[in-house]
Length: 74
Image (cartoon, rainbow, N blue to C red; front, side, top):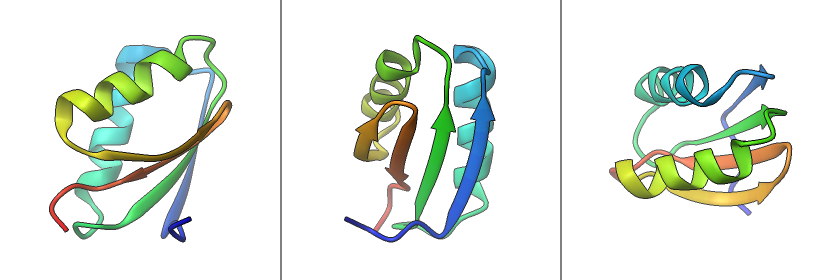
């Protein structure tokens, strides 16, 4: 598994806030970097993978409530 460069605890944020926050955090990272996210929202297991598919970022791992996402571009 890729080693995350940062961790973000999104807590109970819902879909809109969650993916917007994830987007801005990924923009601050170099391409290919991995962010580890803790998201306890019950919809996160569907929202995060769907958002990754739509944006081209890679879902490295998903074990609710923890997710690792690699920024595209590497």
